[in-house]
Length: 170
Length: 182
Image 1 (cartoon, chains in turn yellow, green):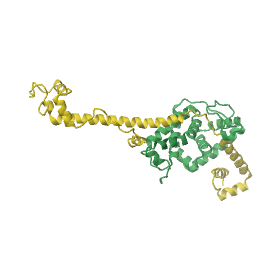
Image 2 (image 1 turned 90 degrees about the horizontal axis):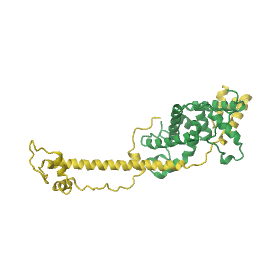
Image 3 (image 1 turned 30 degrees about the vertical axis):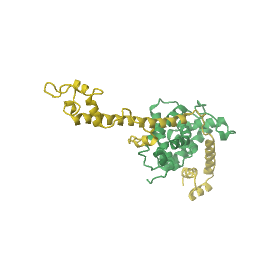
Image 4 (image 1 turned 60 degrees about the vertical axis):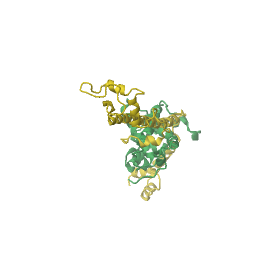
């Protein structure tokens, strides 16, 4: 057995293999070097670097919690906005009211002609607050709160569940 | 690779914020010490340690459980450190016979009788090792990782990790006995 092999095995910790023990018994040079390296190991363990606490761990914990909270709240807002947009679009096209065909006609002439095709002005008038058209649309879309419902504060599980599945490439 | 049962994994995946806080408090200090040595800077060590925790949390959903979370965290951290070293300007080597800047000084509480000067010398000597040897020594002596865990962190065979350790100790011994020898 080579000297380096024996020393490497002896420093690995755990039970020393029989052939290593035999080599060390028969090789004073390796016994001497092993003793010196083990003493150095002991010194190294005592030389653990220390630094005064500066609160960085607690800041990190808050950042991890805040990071998950922000992601959760953003996801809720995006989802709510998409739902509202979808409901409005569905209502517009389903009723055909913007053409003046459904309930809640636009205040202007309801019969579209080539010259009087629905314009932005028509839609704007259609969507005037308080107009019959607006009320009908809202009724069709169902109860949509003007405010985003107050959901319970998102927990870390919301964040982890919605986490990007790209993984770490290290 | 067989799955490793990790006491932290399920609670962290479940989004238990108390578990996240406990995990951070348990590993943050040792991880920062390791990274401070690898990067030779406490400020950089702290910055990279934070990034490692953030990346670990990001990766929990896809973590396969083929090693412990501790090994996974250190693996992330080690690779971030290597990236940091590769992108940072070259710093001069710190030799055992020089008194380096001491970004992470302070006697350890359990070694009040220990020679502080000798401790600084040892840390400087470890910091002067090549990155792979430096990592193995720090993980073994200061983080108390097994060679199997070290191999997992550094993506090495276990035998290679043991060899690095032996040659690192031999090199340290020579540096400390005769600092003028390369």
